[in-house]
Image (cartoon, rainbow over all chains, first blue to last red; front, top):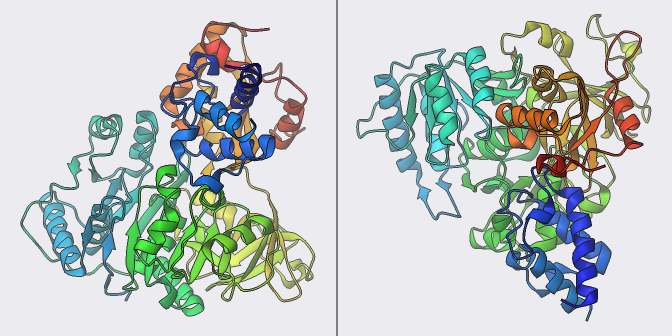
Length: 86
Length: 506
């Protein structure tokens, strides 16, 4: 993972802490683990992630035809950010 | 229509299942026979801890045909909450489906309530008489799932008054093919989104509620089923307008958004996505049979908080929120002047179930005190400006702070507590909690969390906790939740995630 990607991951973790359920630390979820299956985010929290990507990185998720899998793990979200901000 | 319960067709777009009117009649007749075998009779109550399925609606009609009363229950409640409702409502029977949590079915059985599986209706069919207008038809529990339950009782008379009011103001043609994405255990989804069209003979399409994987295919679903109407809440529209391709076929004739405040910006986003100007901010309260006001013709400028005129209801904005004295004309606010919103409608609930004390606090001479603040504009349209209610509105689903407080107060390591609303970008509001503990050791916090999880449905669990030395009270000893929220805003919330992981920080 590049330095930019690492920073984006850390920023994402900071954001996810603000919307997660307090059952366990977000760091206990692996970057390739499904965030929603982890129980830390409820299903509609996907909207919050979309809004975060819109506001922080100017990414319009709907433009490319939306696939929820792209937002299901921290790694896939960072990958999406990296592709939008090469 | 309405009085003879002549219904439209039913379909589940996700599963592909559908029942025609004749199949619905057969399914209802089987359930009438099954309920009769179970000894159900007029005045009995039946818990329905499931919904959003073909079977749910067949159960509802069968219950009504026998003069009994349906009590739809949120299937996410804990065993403790179920037992609380059972001890208050004393149901004769409960019906579950394959999606009902095993813990819920077990809690019902443990409380001595016979439980039947909805698909086990048998082959025998039976007819029944007719329910009477003043029979209790529905009880919707809005709070008190952990203490003294508050159940809104609607009779057939009040429900039909609601539907006839809607028919008079909106007609039924726009509802020819109605889609419901909302849960069927609360008023907005059940009484108005589902039952108004369906009992008017219109076709109803129902999906599991609040599923992102469904919402992101919403545009295609609307096109595939030539949907003419649907309602939802702002949080769902936020998801749909961003992630789902808009419908292309132009079948939508009318769209509602309700249960939570709608901004002018979100209103225009929904219009752009749905392709119709007929997007209405519907004002609904369970006690008035949900949708009680809105715009008949919604093709007007979107405004923050704009509702419109009463649908089968008179709206007054008064200076007073006092239900202990008669209302007088001098109480009325002038146009543009904010005050307390009161409603007068024949669709008003019969009262709160076995809680005349609560009914007296909310109703005066047939006028219902909504708890909302607003004004009537120069056109006589209602514009909402705020709420005076304690409830936390999480994406349209209401959570009552006292339900959470009641649970925490019973934890021996907690000496005081105050639950309050936090601002939330998507849901509008989330749950926050200030708590005074006898000690702040990790073990105590972990034990409190564990206790709350065992007593409260997950969506009621506070997202943010603050450990405080005291909860400020007014001189009369009352908690001011806004003041507690303001005090907590300047403090760092507990890093609960790490405490629960055994890594007490700071």
